[in-house]
Amino acid sequence: MGQFVVAGGRRLAGAFEVSGSKNAALPILAATTLVAAPVTLKGVPLGLSDVQHMLAMLRELGVRVAPASPSRVTVDASGPLSSVLPEQYTRAMRASVFLMGPLLGRLGRVTVSRPGGCNIGPRPIDMHLKGLAALSVRFDDRPGGRIEGGGASLRGAVIYLDFPSVGATENVMMAAVMAAGETVIENAAREPEVVDLAQFLNAMGAEVHGAGTDRVWIRGQLPLHGGCYELIPDRIEAGTVAIAAAVTGGDVTLAHVIPEHLTPLWRKLTDMGVEVRPSAEGMRVSASGDLAAASLRTGPHPGFPTDLQPLMLALMTQAAGCSTLVETVFENRLRHALEMRRMGANVLTDGRMAVIYGPTPLDGAVVEATDLRAGAALIVAGLAARGTTVVLGADNVARGYERWAERLSALGADVILDP
Ligand code: EPZ
Image 1 (cartoon, rainbow, N blue to C red):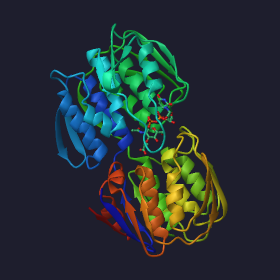
Image 2 (image 1 turned 180 degrees about the horizontal axis):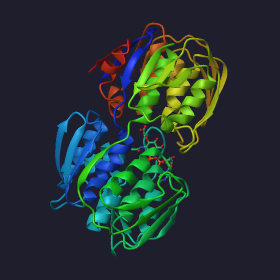
Image 3 (image 1 turned 45 degrees about the horizontal axis):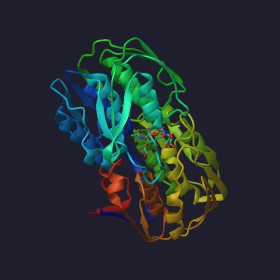
Image 4 (image 1 turned 60 degrees about the horizontal axis):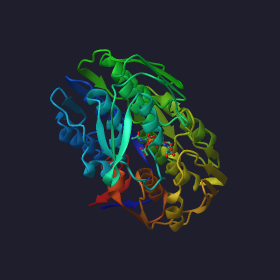
C-alpha cells in the first residue's frame, strides 16, 4: 500500500510544471484502438498507475505499445485485436469501460466485466450502455458479471444523455466515429478532456463538431490515419498545487497550464483572499493574508470540478468563518471530511453537504486516502498541520499524481513516500 509522511508547516514556493492530463490520456489511449496505424502521443503522464494499467490493457488486446520518453508513447493498433477485455484489468480500473466504444467501433463487438462501484459512489454505466445501444449495439449479460456487446453494424443516432456524463459522452463519441451516418449527442459533457478527445479524433481524420458545448455532432465512417497528438495539461493536478500553495501561505507559479480550464477555481480562490494572476510562465498563486470562508457547489463543467472538492475542503478548514460545500456529482465523495476530523478539523457532514468552521489548527494524525483526490486532499491538510501526518493508501494517490512527494518537496514541502 505505502504511505505518505508529511511534516507540516512548510510554505510552498517556486515553479511547478504541470503534467499531461490523466483524464484526457485514458480515453485518448483507448481511442487509439480505432486507428489501424501508429499514433504518437505527447504529454502522457506515463508515471501514473492508471495510465500504466491502460497501456497493459492495450497490450493484452494486441496493440503494440512503445514508450519513448517519460511522457511520450507510440501505440500501434494496426494488427489483429481482441474484443475481450481481461477481467483483472477491468476490476482494477474503471476507465477500462472507455474501451467499449472504440472496440465496438473497430471490431463490432466487445466483452467487458461490469465495473463495480468505488469509494466515491456506485458509478453505474447505464448511460454508456444506453448511448451505445442507440447506435444499434445489442448488449447481453453473461455469467460472472460480463456484458457482451455486438450485433448489427453501428448506425448513427440522436442520443440524449440524462446527465452530462464525461465517460458516456466519450464512449459514444468514439463509437460514433465508426457508425454509418451522423450521430448527435445532446446534453453532452463539456469538460476540457471531452474537447481533447474530439480534437485527437479530428487530428486522426474524424469529424467531430461541437465538443465543449452540450451538443456534439459526429460524421461517421471517415477513414482514420495515424499521426502525432499532444495532450492538454492536467487541470486537476494544477488545481491541487494551487490549493496547496494557498493553504501554506505560499507563492507558486504553475507552468504548462490552460488558465480557462480552471476559471471556477481561480474565482473561488480569489473570493477566499488568495491572489491569482497570469504571469509570463503560466499562473501565479500567492497567499499572504487570512483566508475567508466560502461556499461551493460542484457541478459538471463549467461548474466547480468535483475532483477539486476534497482539496477545497482542506483549504476551508483554514478559512475564517463558516464555509459550506455541496457535492452534486458523486453520491459519496466526502469521506475525506471524516479523516480530516481526526486531524482536528471542525467539519460536519450530512449526505452530500459539508459545513466547515475555521480557521482550525490541524494536528498531524494517521489518516487514510480512501480514493485518489481524498488522498491528495489529506496530503494538503498535512502541509497545513502541526507535526507529522501519515497518509495511508499511497497507491490511490499514485493513480493520478506522478512522483508526488518529489515534486512537492521541490516546492519546499517536507513529504516522503514510504513504500
Ligand atoms: C470522469 O469520470 C473522471 N474520470 C472523474 O475523475 C471525474 O470525477 C468525473 O468524470 C466527473 O468530472 C475520468 O475521466 C477517467 P461521469 P466519469 O460519468 O466519466 C453518474 C478523478 O479523480 N453516472 O461524468 O466516470 C456517476 O455515477 C476521477 O480523476 C451514471 O449514473 O464521470 C456520477 O455520479 C474520479 N451512469 C455522475 O454520473 C452512467 O452511465 C458523473 O459521472 C455514468 C455516470
